[in-house]
Length: 146
Image (cartoon, rainbow, N blue to C red; front, top):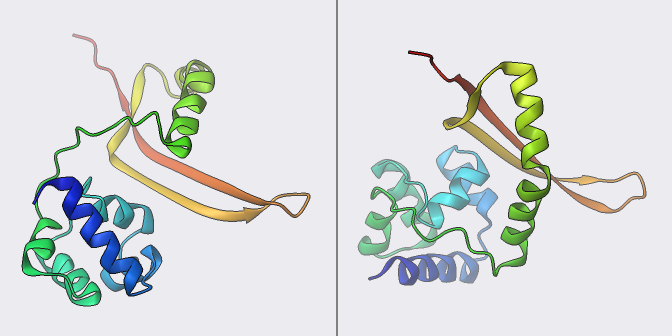
C-alpha cells in the first residue's frame, strides 16, 4: 500500500471505532500532537506502541507494521489546506520578527526540531470564544564559529 492509502485506512478505522487522537495518545503514553503525526506516518511508533495502536484500532498486520517504519517526510508543505496554509502564513508574516527576537534572546542559532515538543490545546478567549493555542518548545542550538 502507498503512504496515502495507509493513512486513509488507519484514519477510517479510528473514525469508525470513534477513537480520538487523545485516546490513542493515552494508549501509548505519548503527546497527542506526536501521536497525530505518527498516525499520519510523519513520525514512527516503537514496535510495542504500534502493536498497542493496532490492537486498539483493530488494524491489519500491514497497517500496524506501517506505524513503526521510518517516515519519509516529503509530502509537505501543503498550501491548499486552510489550516496548514494559515500556519505557513503566520511564519511568513511573523517569521522575521521571531528570528530577530530569538537572536536577541539567545544569540545566533536555531530552534531544534529534533529536541523538540509541541502541544495544542483548546482555550477560552476573553470574549468566551474558542481559541487554538499552539506551543512550540525546542532546544536552542547555537551556530558554531570555526
